[in-house]
Length: 383
Image (cartoon, rainbow, N blue to C red; front, side, top):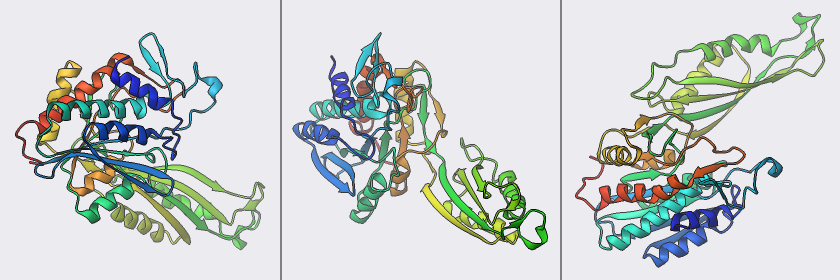
């Protein structure tokens, strides 16, 4: 087997369901140390994070960002083979994490080893940042590491995240940003009573529905650059005692906003609570800020990625800000330009997750070409 295929299989064989790293980062750190990287293990709570660097601070810093944790496999009997026993069939590697994202992590490691072997005195720093908390709450992973970096004054110029971004073929999509995500759990209080005597009760459903309709129907903006318009989606509504003749005393609602750089979480919170208050509701609301939106404008990173992906993908990549969120949302606020490049995402989080072996074996070359384009040539950071 090739070096990247062998390492990917070793990682898949470790049942690293969030937040358990299952020794993946120790394995990777041993390889990187042998290649000359300085490795620092940052553990917060139950979460393992690895920060590995090569080179000095004289020049730009390029970070390869990934995660070693995976989502649970679900019913193992639904899989064609054991999700934690890598299996190659008809040129395809099956196993949990094959695409999301142990294949990319393995390719990062191999590309980094090859780069420092070929360019031992390269300018700037090449770094890998790995966490075991990307698929979970993302509290003690890159979010916490970014706080440490902020305190240290760590400078990061460019960040390449190995999330599975491709649609049909490797390199056909370049992620240049992501929307922010803001979730709310709303409780609207009323007065419970008999449905035959509504004058003696206050129905929180009747009170809240006009406000919810206003929030759901609002045109928040018209989009931003390549971002779609901001969207508020109600995901759950719950009220009642189970009896058809009882007006409930409380309504619970969950909703989420996916928003572009026209907004930040603070202003969205203010806008939503303003609508609720304007309808005279007696309410409590809890907010969870998953991360702010980020967008990488034209510059050396985006230009290099466009050039490399066109070469590997056989044509110019689609440049997109779609999808959910990624850990790059914690690195971008440090001042870094961020992109996401990885394998085809069709099977991620599914039964029989897989990656084409040919794509996996091309990934180290793709990442190496990006690293060389940014660190082995005269390139001005963040210009």
